[in-house]
Length: 330
Image 1 (tube, rainbow, N blue to C red):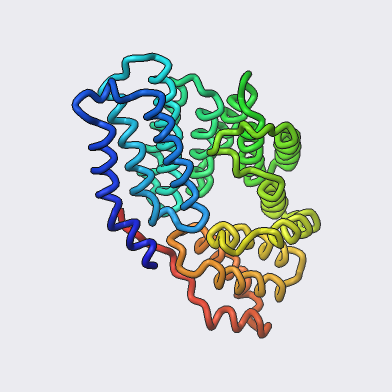
Image 2: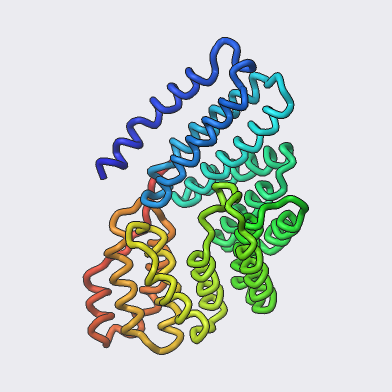
């Protein structure tokens, strides 16, 4: 809690300090490759906050980084090569800010950042980064119960462009698989999971940081989530059990979120008490992380469990845990 309060209290200072250092009297001269590389290193470090904190905690810091690069671009950059690097960085910063806003439930802000990120990536001629903005937007549309297939198909097209890193392709295909699973298309889901696995096998250590987190465990979790949504518990349960067993509790938000699909599949398989145990454990792991998504998911699973309140584990869960959606105004 102290760490989160500190982040919120210093976000305004971060904006002011960054702008003062990066946007001096001659901002265009300051926008060198070294400046871009330093801002990129900052983003790599700040992105690690996402492993432990929710979007309501981190949004202002990510948005501050995007504001710095936007100011440099507006001031003008003397060299075209530096301008393209700065555009790509701004696209990545904007997408990270959009992700934090989405995680906090601030959907208008998230959409604006995703659109800005896509525009900057397209201008920088970075197909993978443009595809990532589309994949983010599709993920948001899904959360809002809006059609996302068309945008996911556009992200797949971006993944297939020449020069797109294999790790980025793995990310885009896995996210597209998620869209297709929610659309009830098992064939397209399986095809894109397979393409993601093939791309991941070609990963060479040069993957951009925004996609470097996708590894065998993350892909296994996405695979399990997809089969869970397709109501294939015999496929979903083994892969989710195995992957989550290796997933650290330190990643509280994501582990709680991912575990909700394991609980769903347990219910589908008739293992209600197992599902209740997973939800109880997930609530303990999640604590007070400032993210709406795991709360929404666990609330939905708990609602399914309420039909089995005659079971002791379910009754204990229902009586001891009240899931209230996080509401952080913006």
